Length: 477
Image 1: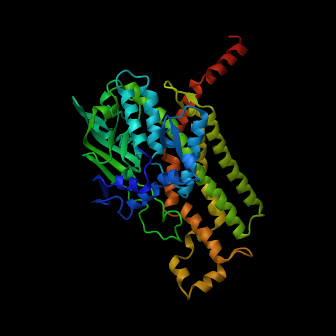
Image 2: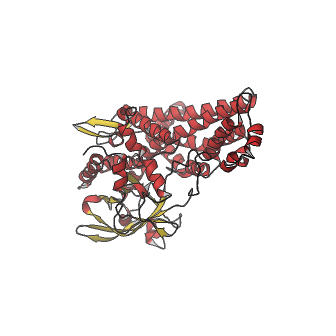
Image 3: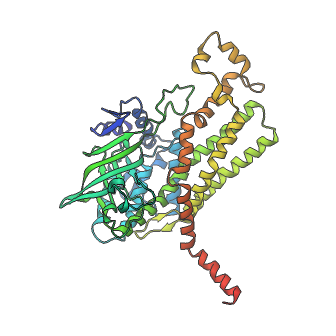
């Protein structure tokens, strides 16, 4: 099949899926006042494929097929970097908000390919068939991985309620029935398929929790509880980012959902469950850092603009903040590129970003993001949250006062300066700002998860052993 148009993508979402928003069942996600904004935002991926300015980046022709570059299995460092550039370009078109309807799903597909290639049984063939189905039909995908978890000190099988980690509750000749809840599932309201992965390594007796599969978004028993965060009314001038762009997050409930055998990609292999969770992270943190770059680039650009408008470009403390922002941004970018350059081979011929480098990149971004926001807000000033609204500007009585008193340096009128303030306010101080700040800490893995991966990768690549050999030689041991 050819690549889908934006309209064909929207039409595919009218399939009777069970979505809830603020306690009410949603009839049509493409017309809902909040969720439809997320669907329209997601159309960016399909628009790029049709745009001559982006088609070469967004579309691949390979083995007689034409498909989205997101589905291209990376086999070289250049493949990874082209993927990163596509993610960055799409996020830039989203005014700093990632699209994510193909990025995260293909991260999962790459991980499934790499892990199942080493397993006995039909799993690799099933993954390949599902991958081709998604690629050839240009489908939108989400990933459900994080479980409810209950008592975090206990394993899945030790929970008082065994459903706190998604598990198999019934096995049939033609498939399995699963039950549980997955948290933080991005874009699920407006995708075609939901891929489910284990959230962690499992113990030897936890085979029922070691399950990976995919189901269509309208599968009976699949319930999506859409988060109301960020659903307030927006105005185009006051909210230049969030008026047009939105991502839905859901609590995704599997209420005794049947999964046919051909959609089961891992079942009962507790060791492979852990490898799958970690391999997915290798790809997904590379995606994460790729889509964070337009966000921190926007912070840097906004800092320069508002400092100029406020007339403070020459101040010493401003230059210090610029140097910090530049160093932070370019360190993250360099680590992203180095992770691709250092890519590691997988058993089936594909490559993955270097785990240690990409986790250092993600950790560097996450630890520095709040400071970057602080610098921008300090340079902008408190009027980010105390300034006038659209109605004030529209008032014939009030506008002359605003135009007189809210000017910047010579040559910068009040309207121009306040437009910059509104962009910065939407980026950092409204609901979108805290949303991005929480994502910086928790999305794609917590600080502690990144530390564990860095430590594990450093030891696995032999460098720690090399140091011990050097020490042993010096000590004469």
